[in-house]
Image 1 (tube, rainbow over the protein chains, first blue to last red):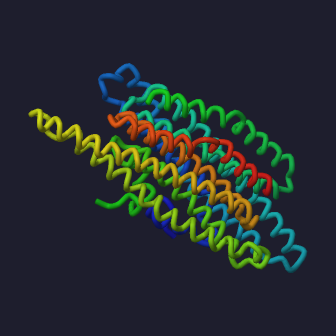
Image 2 (image 1 turned 180 degrees about the vertical axis):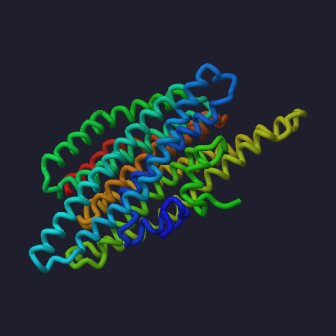
Image 3 (image 1 turned 90 degrees about the horizontal axis):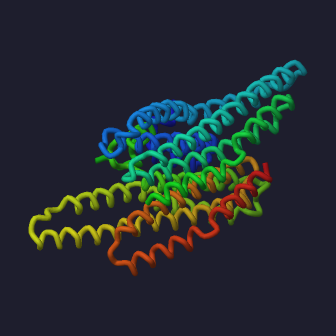
Length: 209
Length: 209
């Protein structure tokens, strides 16, 4: 099976739109984050080497390195969401005739649900980090490409809010409520103030245009 | 030259991140919108034919048709942004030795700048429309895939705000100020209240999870 990242954009969009269960919103969230980091990298790449921005050259190099590492992680998450969804469907599809089978199935569902909670939570965290990186791009990047930092922050914010929805869904089905509550608290800590932060970074960009 | 939509997601992200001037934030904005409509279509496709949702079947068919039409438009805009950027660069690169050349160059730049203002404005409008479509998906779609409507609204909202930045940039360079002011007023009308609307649709989804 071709990984989603190796499909064309047209194929990805067609499959997203189709009745196929994957890819879905979780992959879309990861792509939003990956696109954000790519745009931050673009700002860095078009700032580095410009005499006018020599003062921030070292910072831009560091930022580029961070953005590219995060992009690798977020790009892998596009596929991770599909894989865990398929695992979850496989768990739900396990035999449930005997009591033993019912127990084994239920345990497997719960095991995969933990993973299906952790994966979008990690995506949400990565998107929040992408927002931070876009802020530095907006702060220090070349004015010639500063609008790309504005697109980066909006894309990352959308990714964060999108990933959050999958955390809510999967955490709700977890029987281990203490684990679920811990993960939901982590999510709320990430979400808290993110709307204001996104708007601040966006306005920082807009005011530089 | 391969159209962006025919490149793999990995290639697109790599080129976005690179120092190549295109694709940039304008293409990213259009992709955000296209992804939104694809997710709305997914909600429709996974609601249509389900006995539980027979009552909204006709509405979902109509919504699917609208979302797919808009997806075609937004997907084409991914490339349109690249094309107009290249035209603008070509115009700036025209000869400017003689007075006649200077005049011709300046006129060509202004002609292309009008186009470079209209294109992201059309993208902003299409993204605002994609938000409306995601609202109907959130209102009437199957609860099994309702979170995808939440991702759809965030992706479209990010696309709208992103496209707006390119309208600001290009409108600012227009010498025909009355044309620029009309286009900026159209943009403000689209943007006005979009943040509240995005949050409302998102909460509509979240409260159904």
